Structures are given as C-alpha cells and as structure tokens.
Amino acid sequence: MRKSAPVLILVLVLVLAALALFRLPRDDDYDHSPLGNKGLELWLRAKGIPVVRSDPHVARASSETSLRIVPLSIRQGEVAPQLGEETDEANPESAVQESSRYALPTLVILPKWRGNVSTDGVASAAGLVDLADIRGELDRIGYSGLSLDRSEKGFEEAHPRLKLDQPITIALYHAQTFDLASLPSSCRELAGTLTGALLVHCENYHHAYLLSDPDLLNNHGLALADNASFAVSLVTRLRGAGETRPVYLDTLGQPLDSEKPVDEGKSYERSASDLQRFFAYPLSVIWGTLLVVAAVCFWRGAYRFGPPLREASANIELSKTAAIDATARLLRLSGNDGRMAGQFVLHLLADKAQLLFGSGAGNQAGIARLFQRLTRQDKAAAQALHAAAEAMIERGHQMTRADLHRNLETFRKSLGSFDLGSK
Image 1: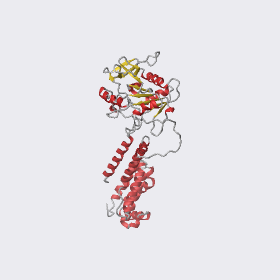
Image 2: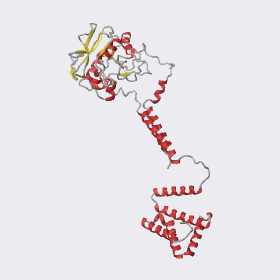
Image 3: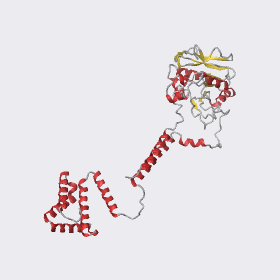
Image 4: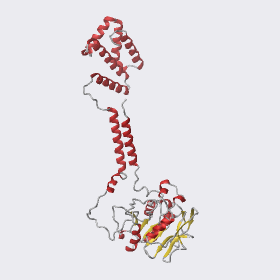
C-alpha cells in the first residue's frame, strides 16, 4: 500500500484554503444584513425614486444628486463597518460641511447598533452603542449642543408627522431620540415621538438633517409597522417633490466634486489594495474552483501512478501480469465472465507449455505439443481437458453461469491429474 499520508495532508490543506477563499466576505455582506441599507435602495427605486450608491472608483458631483444620505459610523468602539468602508479615508464630517458648500440636502443617520448584532443575528440591549460614543461623534461634526435619549421599553410605536395629512405609525426597538428639553434654540424638530425628536434641522448647517434612529431606514426597520412609508415620505420631503435627480446613498464618506467629472484619461496610483479585487466575489468562486480541481488532479495522479521507478529495466512478467489484470478488470466490469474465463484457460495452457518446452512454446503449436504429451500419459483425462478448454475458449462467452462453472471444474480436475513439474 502506498504511503499516501503526505498527499492526503496536501489535499486537506488545499481544500481548507479553497473553503476559506469561498468564505471571504463579499463587499455587500453588510449591505444585505439587518443593519445594512440595501432594502432602502430597492424600496426607493420601487417607489420611482432613483438611487445611486457610493463607489471608490467613481467620482460623484454634487450637481448630480438631489439628496445625500450618509450613515454615520463610530470611529472609536465596536460598530458595524459600512459597506466598503476604509477607516483611514472615510470622513463623515466632510458630508456635513459639503452640505453647506454645495447647498446639497444631506441626511446624516446616527449609529445605534454594534457590529455583533449583524453577525450574531440577535438585537438586544447589549448590542446598543453607548450614547457617550455617539455624543462624541456629534461633537466632532459640529453638533455639540445635541443630547440623545434611549427608551427602555423595548418595542414601541409612535406617530410622527412629516405632512399634516399623512398620519404614519412607526415601530422602534429601544427608540433613540434627541432630547427635546436640551434642544438648542438654533435647532428644530421636524419629526419625532411624544418624548423626543427623531429628525432635527439646525441653522448652523442649513442643508444638513440629523436622523437619530437608523432603524427607520435600515433593512430590519423597514419591515416594521409603517417605517417603509415613513422612509419614502422623509426622502421625498428632503429632496423635493419635483426632483428627478437620484438620491446618493453614501456609505464611504468620500468628498464630492463641485462639477461633473470629465471623462478623460487619468493616471492612477496603484497599491496593494488593487490586488484584492482579483480575489473579490465572484472571482473568489473561480479561484476556489481552480484550487479544488488542481488538488483533485494532483491527488489522483499521485495515487494512480505512484512514485517513479528507480530502475529502468523492463520486467516482462510484471508487464504481462498487469496486462492480464487490466483485461480481466475490463471484462469483469462489462459482465462478460465467459470471455474472461476463456482467456484465463488459454493463458494457463500457454504457461504450462512454456514450462515444459521452453519460453518459445507459448503459442498454439506449443499448446498442441502439450496435449500430445498429456495424451500419452492419460488419454481419457487429456481428452476431457482438451474438450473443456476448447469449449471455454471458443464458446465461453455464450455459456450460462452453470455451464461455465461445470467446464471450469472439469478443466481444473483434469489439469490437476497430470504432473507437469509445478503446481
């Protein structure tokens, strides 16, 4: 038995590498999670509102969009990363400043949940971001006067109004709102609950709006109560009812261009991150498949043929035995036992002839001389042996299993009655 342990270990390593490659996180894993915003994109498009997403390889101009939506993330602490987020480059502060610079309506969504909520699939009080961390982010982007509250009631409903003629019922879990008592005089509430404000607009950044609870726009929250209707009303009010330009869902926080980029040749600086694109989904599936196929081919080749022989001298007997074994295997797989038995009898008689008359007697003439010698020893036994051998060689493939077995038994007993010098 070949020592196949090293081969099996190599195959195992390759399979594990392929599995790891298959399970590389795709760029849209978070976007499709309960805390992502893919549902908002699809829902707005279903309602006739075009949406474009941020792309690190595509520059966006402020004049191309009607509303910019920026999900804010906590830089310090464990918070779910945004789609395609690069921590060193993302700058949520610039979105608020650019809202005034370009007179672009911008909706900043405050964070609420930690990253483990998306991976574990369980939303509980332990998965909530600390309010102190969120207040730190508000201070950083220029809203130091705002304070947040969080309800302890679990799920609760509210009836915020964006329009006087449009009552909407929303549902939130541990609702996160701005504290009305400490709301600065320069800020006003646009929508909220009985105990706090959900949507706030301040004069220092005239075109920026703050949404306190992300569950009103994320995948999980859109499925609750009338949250989906509230999302459409909110986006329609902020972008304007007659707008046709798309909503810009900015999950990267990249600065906008003042003008539409001109389509012309540009020189780009390449980095190691560009190589990662060759292993991103769906290319990761292709690489994984190639690894698995290569591992199977390597294992099959090593197991089937084994290591190379040290001596180049041909072994005739070994080759002959291998050829007989291969032919027998093919005949056995095809179900033709009779033809296989006929070839076995023919080869056995040829071997006996060579044993008696030399290596050149393994042919029909040698077999004939063998029967002549056996006839001189025992004519009856020689005739029975010859009849059984001739029947199996010429008509073995046509015999039934019973006839084949009977002739084989006769051949064995007849041949065993002669002393040929070897058993």
